[in-house]
Image (cartoon, rainbow, N blue to C red):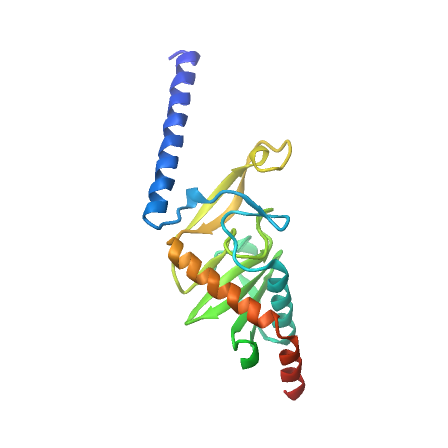
Length: 217
């Protein structure tokens, strides 16, 4: 087979693959399904995300700091979690804290390991896990980005790759791993996202209630 003919076949195959991807995304929107292929880089607050984000970064970091400072800490196994550098993070630290009723009464967990941190909101036996730092240049506070997931609500996690020159990384042309992203229905994703946003907002907006609670206890 000549090089020219191989090139023609390869070009046609790529065109067909692109067509299938577009069709798949269109169908995904119609059937209310978010697939791994539909995650595209989006700029927000100076960071890169791989999906529509929920929550304000400043408020999320503030709550994470409060949970770590006031929560009860313990070492736990990372088994069952999708996190960066899994082999180096077999045992991680978790701090758990329940806010006073005046601040929404939400329970949060702050997770810390080798080169990563995350904030989790407890919700009816499940934990909305938001990776704050680590993993890749796409990782940042707010749902839904790489490694963001819901603990105890099993959803497939798919590895997503990106091309550096296509996503603002200058002359980097090689593909690299963005991270793992959760695949779930858009309605479920939105429901968890709204609960997370509301919980973070309530907890981060009542410093006086928190201070009074800590003084009394």
